[in-house]
Image (cartoon, rainbow, N blue to C red; front, side, top):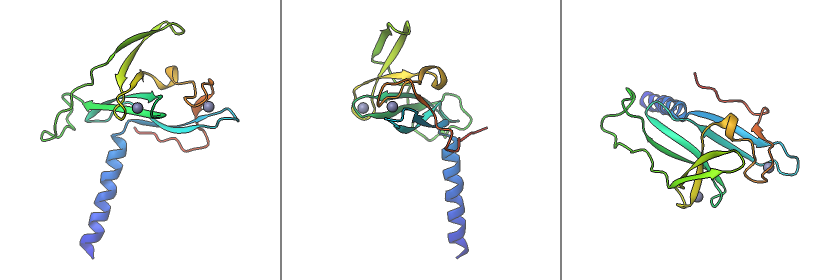
Length: 145
Ligand SMILES: [Zn+2]
Ligand SMILES: [Zn+2]
């Protein structure tokens, strides 16, 4: 009986660590009354990996690429090293004047642009295109220190 209890506790600890490793998690919601699209979006990597975020138009969801964070003390030496993803290329966004780096979607291999910064670069709702996409204040914000 005791052994069972211990393993449940350990699983809880592992789940908590995995959540911390996921970066900054945002519950995003389109504020448009006719849309209301919601999605959880994660930015940044964890102790042992780096991550980039994008939205795949074909898959209709946020997608992520992860690779090993070099030199991290949290790195498991036995784990297989994942190399940083190679971009497919860059395109110039005439509206913002910036170059967008394009990567292949991990699920459909279609192109998606990396979203570099949540607060600066993620304002438009991927479902309706309106500039009403914001962190949903009605949901608890997950903060990692
Ligand atoms: Zn895709
Ligand atoms: Zn919307």
